[in-house]
Image 1 (cartoon, rainbow, N blue to C red):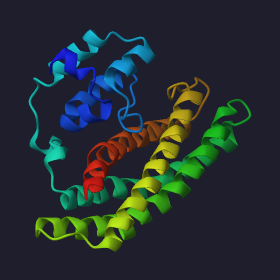
Image 2 (cartoon, rainbow, N blue to C red):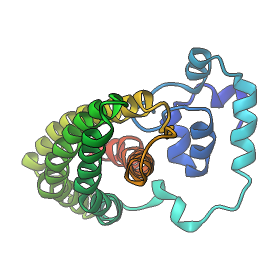
Image 3 (cartoon, rainbow, N blue to C red):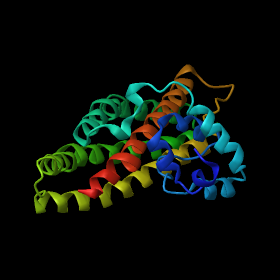
Image 4 (cartoon, helix red, strand yellow):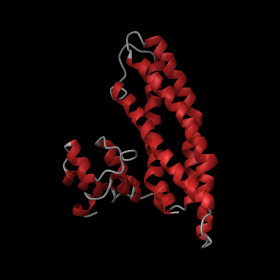
Length: 237
């Protein structure tokens, strides 16, 4: 990666090309999913980071062994869509309600001394509700249209006009929802002080913060795969 060129690339483009670089951005608190459209140089300026240092770290991580399953940008669209459903959608369906329940519980038990958990419970409740509709839209509307359009393109045919319109409208809605959900989980991280656990709390409190951190990590990869890889390819259809 040439330093003069890497600064002009967006965060999303860099991670889409090589997912190993995500670890560098995470270590510096750089949002590579919802904030992936910002150029690396601009991000470094905004955060007061040295571009040459970040570029060197990116180059170093790209020399590490690349696992075959990390090359997401090379995957066919239908396969990538199925992977997102079977990995990230399944995770959300299995964990959203559990995390919301834990958050409500610690809000009731610890809210008097730690009022931030009351706000966290309310934010996550909305995240869980919004995600349910978001996943339904992707699984029942967007991904089926995407697969049909991709099949047509593979057969050297023009995608159906209705499918193209569905993809266009869904892309606008889904990207907006990604930003809203990303802002919400970042607010939780902020008011929890990076998921710092107070000394006077129970094991459920600790487990809730652990699950919230896990949720955020999964969300980052989930949104990255869509915002920076799947959505741009879908737009080309």
